[in-house]
Image 1 (cartoon, helix red, strand yellow):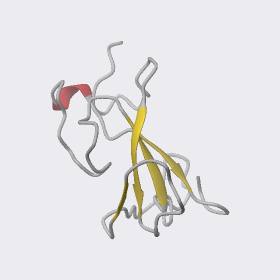
Image 2 (tube, one colour):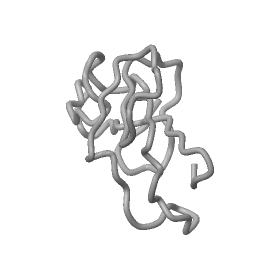
Image 3 (tube, rainbow, N blue to C red):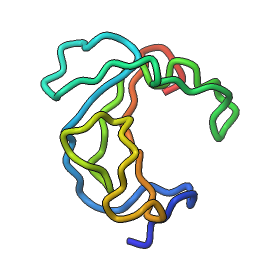
Image 4 (tube, rainbow, N blue to C red):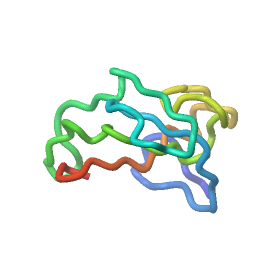
Amino acid sequence: DDHHEGDLRSPIGVFSLSDAGGLRPDPGSRLPYHRSSHFVAGGTGFQGEPLAGSFDYVVAIDYNRVKGTSPLDGTRPQGYGKGGGVWIHVDHGGPT
């Protein structure tokens, strides 16, 4: 996969899910959960949708990240050019 930062594509492959987090309290996740006020997105998405509330709950996809750390951890073992920070994010009734 030639995925790189800023190409607007998801990386291709099968990745584990090891860490969760979000703006809201842990809903009972079986994954380690990191609650933080830094799970905030302002502005709008690619199709003009509001992003407020998009990161109430996230699960980090283990692509170019350190397992066992907060989804907010910006460490990129394969280098920053390969991208990272890929999350599944859930907001019931919101933009995601």
